[in-house]
Length: 68
Image: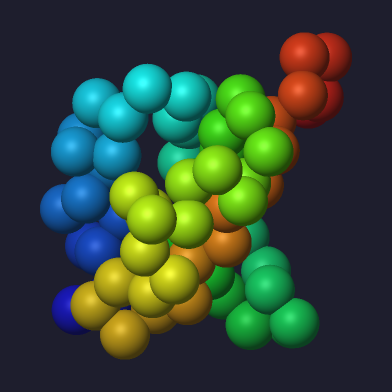
């Protein structure tokens, strides 16, 4: 499954989690990864959001107001 397909398959469920603000594809250590943007410290989501999905790494990132 491509990273785009993995993102599309899981975004709706992640967006249902309180504090998840958005998702996207970015770079983690110069390799493509799925980014999940959260409104609280990412550590608070370790038990509810995965470290990887469909073989693709996932990064939980604090989405701060005013970020673009």
